[in-house]
Length: 275
Image 1 (cartoon, rainbow, N blue to C red):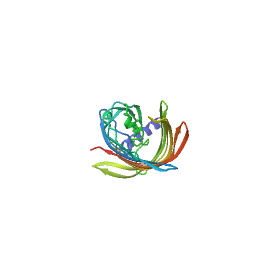
Image 2 (image 1 turned 90 degrees about the horizontal axis):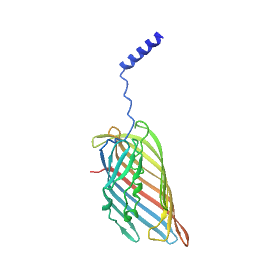
Image 3 (image 1 turned 135 degrees about the vertical axis):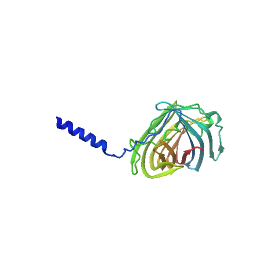
Image 4 (image 1 turned 180 degrees about the horizontal axis):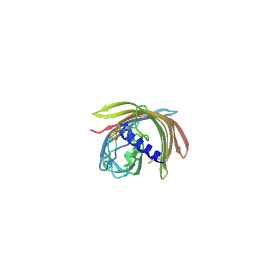
């Protein structure tokens, strides 16, 4: 027994004397209470519908400054400081007013690894809702981090499933994202890493069309790719760029029967700190 204690004592002293390399800190988002982040987001998208009469293209653009304010634990609020929306189709261009939505809080849960859950959303004006679904703006706003450090060459995958229904309307989405740390970089004096990402997506949604005696159901599947720049020491996402293409169908349901239209959806999105 004395020998065992002596060995433990010697081992403890030896380890204390050694200059062991520091263990890398697990990656996490900094979420200090009363800390506020502001990001500029620009997303462009287009939908091409194909019918017997030919193709119809609808394009849209969302240009916004979004703020996040953190509270205790995983609690956070987000709001739009500015929001410009437009949609163009053969019928013309729509640019609905968004002033009523500015600075209205979205209540969120944000984990240290970047998973966001919407707890409560403000009322969205009908003109805005006709162009974009802001209830799902934050589903994958932040890259979801691994359980560990962001060492060069580190690769990981993450699966996310979200869904909701409001009356006869419904929405479901599933994503499987794959990430890999490619190289180091420095952005405005901040040390960061560049992370490549690809993602498989499946989306389905449906519900009645406002002002028309029809309902729709759409299904899309495809992938996107891009890169994320993350600063591990600061716990901040600096930029995120994505582009992708999904294909599927849009089913229009009317009293006279269903019409199924093939569709292609493409988008590009960039998020970076707001000036």
